[in-house]
Structure formats: C-alpha cells, structure tokens
Image (cartoon, rainbow, N blue to C red; front, side):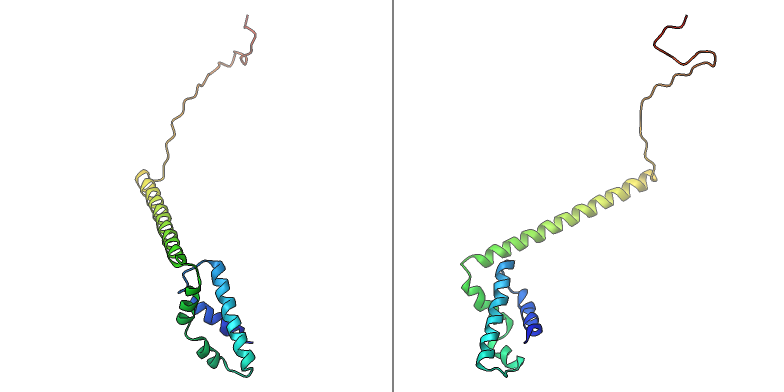
Length: 136
C-alpha cells in the first residue's frame, strides 16, 4: 500500500546502515513487516502515523544494528574505507598514466622512432632471382 514511501524511508536510512547488502535487505523486510503490523492494527492509518510509529530512519537503523552480531559495523566500515582507498589509488594511477602519455607525446611531438635491422640485397637486372642452384 505504501511501497513508494517505504522505499523512500529505506533509502534515507541506507546511508546510516553499516552492514552488507544482505543485512540491508533484511532491514527493508524489517521495515515492511513493521508497516504491515501497524496496518493490521490500524488499517486506515496514514503514512505520517506509520512514520511516527516507526520513528526517524536513524532510530530504526540504530535499533536494527543493535540486533546484529558484535563487530559487524566495524567490519563493514573498514571494508568501505578499503574500497574507497583502492578507488582513490586506481584513480590516481589512471591520472598518472594519462599525464605520462600527454607528457611523452608533447615532448616527442607524437613521433615514435623504432629502430630495426634489415638486410637489403640489390640484384642487377642481368642476374636471375637467387636460387639454391649455383649459377654457372
């Protein structure tokens, strides 16, 4: 009945959840169950009444996080920091490579010189194409 409002409520709480995707989905189910329970008691309730019963998203997150095992929040905070730092490092690497390429092509004016060795044999017009048989 209030699907859009529930999604909005969960979206506003999502930034404060310090857990993985599976726990976030459980939180959304937890909120939906709370809304359904409230609607069973008061079927004609408005969303404002339901939201007042649920509380602000920060309170719902705090209550839900207290049900998770000890150390879950710290684990996901450290994992998020690690992903953030790896993303920063990858971005810096790409920027450094682009700067290096720009510097290389600006110094060389886009000209690449390759050195190779090859043997060229010039034959006179009267000498036939070389074969394995000796010329007599």
